[in-house]
Length: 468
Image 1 (spheres, rainbow, N blue to C red):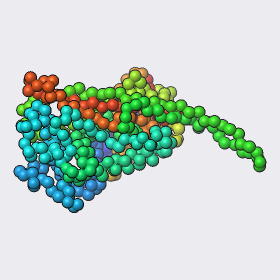
Image 2: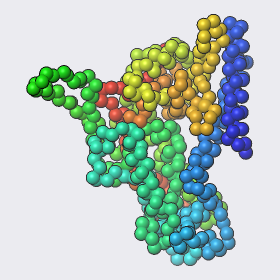
Image 3: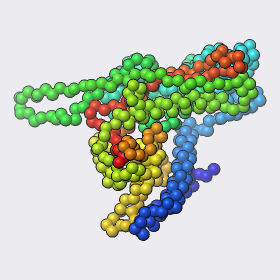
Image 4: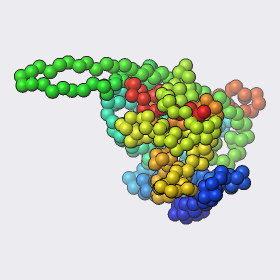
């Protein structure tokens, strides 16, 4: 596989080739031909594939730097003792293979029967804190708010402080789940790691979770979040020995509920559970997690409010109408950006369907007086960790948005950290032993509770543009 630097260099070369196609057409004072557009689109398809690979390698590189080592994965020695390597403090290091086998043991615990589970499998389950007799596994996706940490006090701090708080709480949880023996206090938390693929699927799908502020609560009761808009109020000059005037603030609230989601169940045969050599945690976690991720991302994007209130639904109109059914102009994009208050624009980004990205990539910007060719509005990020940008702002592709068409809210811009996603702490994975027992099958499903809405006290941190 090519290195990061090689992939970035190849991405830059392709971007230059695509720009040259637009430049030739502009020099000849004509629109690109159908053949040129096909070549242009093909080049950008290749750029997108490179971008995905670059992002993956950057994530892996960051993970390895954070851990100081590459995590052992899918190692399958012949003896249990060879896998149970002591850590520096004398405890047993739990490997990825241990977690995979612990989950497989839980999956088999009902249909096969505890008396048919080998001692070797029981040890895997015990080490990872998994009870094979239980019909459910509760997964803590992240740190929950303490009862002593009211939502109002948290949201009065800045977005950076919020993300720092979340990171600190996540690190606290990680400290409990790294290296543990079967008797270590808190050992039950290692069960979460057996289904890490479920959390990965939730985080990776759709785009909303990657840019929103995600909070996790220990219970599912209504969660009121205070809001206030004091932007029109100003202070005053007063004379010596003069009493200051009172100017009260007006508060509102945003209430988040906890809608219950089901992955719908999947079936696995007993033969599959006994004989398969695939990674059980990846199979089950990806299958269940992606299903919940799809429906929640749809609702976080276009939800009506009788479910999560989606970002498209909650966003405010910018009054910008794009110049065509499936096109836009440079002036349109500038107008949209400047409808957002500078306080939110500093953390601004775009969001659109992949069809919206294709539309924006075809926009050319004149660089100087007399320039007849222009340069693409889309600029690739070629340095390590640098994002591709539109008009200097990063963007998120969200396939739950609608592709550009007449009357469609095709572009969003603003501070997406003001969209609050609420997760109720546990995701429950259920093993239904008896439902399809007569067929020799077992049903598995995941249940979780979520809500989402835009925190907007009247300052409109996110706005949309409509296609003509």
